[in-house]
Image (cartoon, rainbow, N blue to C red; front, side, top):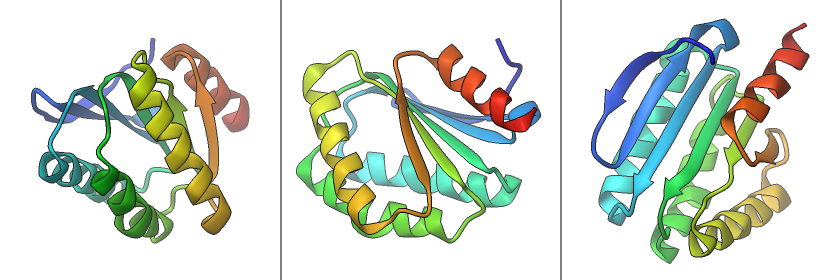
Length: 138
């Protein structure tokens, strides 16, 4: 397991920085209202820019349903903000909640069609995502 620095933590998300991989990891926890989800996502993007991270991991294993409003916001606000950073890849850890995963899959497809400069990949667990990043660094 990689060592990391927790940058921000609430009962809905934890944002950490993995220096050895130059990666921001966002761990989503449970259901968050649209306002809370947007606020946490923007905090993560600000940390991405502050640290100059090249990779973002969105760990959705414990996340719950993402509202349609948040899905649209992600497409219209969050993704364009990421495009203005140094991020080259977004690694998504699949949710244990089938409804959440369905929403995530829809967001991935919608964003692939309009924003293809960031590589997006999905994984079942965090360790697989770490191995992927390490292979690219070596």
